[in-house]
Image 1: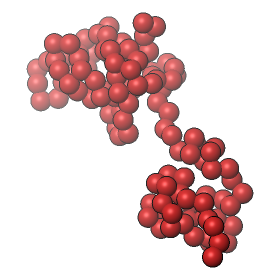
Image 2 (image 1 turned 45 degrees about the vertical axis):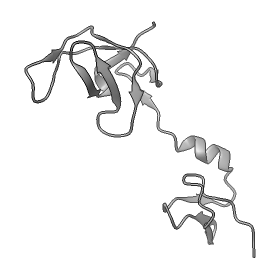
Image 3 (image 1 turned 90 degrees about the horizontal axis):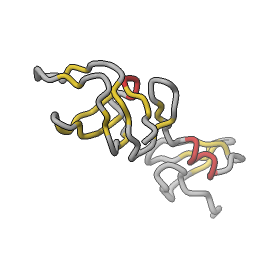
Amino acid sequence: MTNLPPCAKCHSQYTYEDRNLYVCPECGHEWPKDKDLVTDAHDSQPTFSDAHGSVLQDGDTVTVIKDLKVKGSSLVVKVGTKVKNIRLVDGDHDIDCKVDGIGPMKLKSAFVKKSLN
């Protein structure tokens, strides 16, 4: 029995070979036999950027660049509102945060810019 590498995404031990690929039956991830697993795991991490192209990270402070209506409410998040300690998530609205005076909500990274402090 050969010793195959574990899946780079879900770390499953049940990988198998298919021609020049390794395949994970649990998550469906495929990668070439000659590709380095470290770079493959790094490439799978999504990157998030603000409206000006600056890369965002968890814990950053951002500023809203457009008035945003809060769905299901008459509240509005005004231009210039600073949001501290953001958390990045996958999805259409990729920022989870808490806006002062409004509460927890999700924002799109296209409507914020990264603040220096």
